Image (cartoon, rainbow, N blue to C red; front, side, top):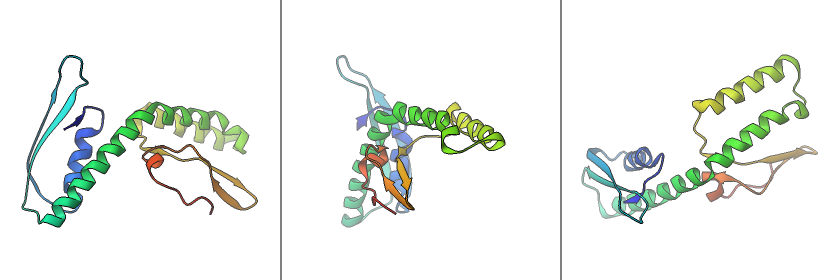
Amino acid sequence: MADDSPFVTDSVLIALGADGAQTRFFANDVVRREAHPPTAIFYAELDALDTGDLAALEVRLRETLLDVKAVVADFAAMRERLTLARDALADWGFGGEDLEEARAFLEWLARDHFVFLGFREFDYGAGTLRQVDGALGILSRRKGTGER
């Protein structure tokens, strides 16, 4: 069971098969109750798993559901960052055909041709790439390396 949200069913299916386990049967539905958010219910039949594999699957499913929550919570903010990047292209030294091509590409992405899972910003100066605080989506749950 999980809060119903975009990406949740596909993400659960991917997590189930991540280590090569065969899903023999999968069903899902959404339960709606008054005064409660919709709940996604999943039923899966897998090939037999040993205790270690079963424990790893449980951890993977929990982590996957946390990733889904982070993506859904930050989805609008990630799209806003795309808009800000598109608007800043000229400030970053793009010009002429390169500017138009880059803008067109970012606008194409914004028309739902890309699923934003995470965002992380970097500053580049003096030959060093430095990570800026404020990662979004799944990257908000993962520590970056700082400088490169």
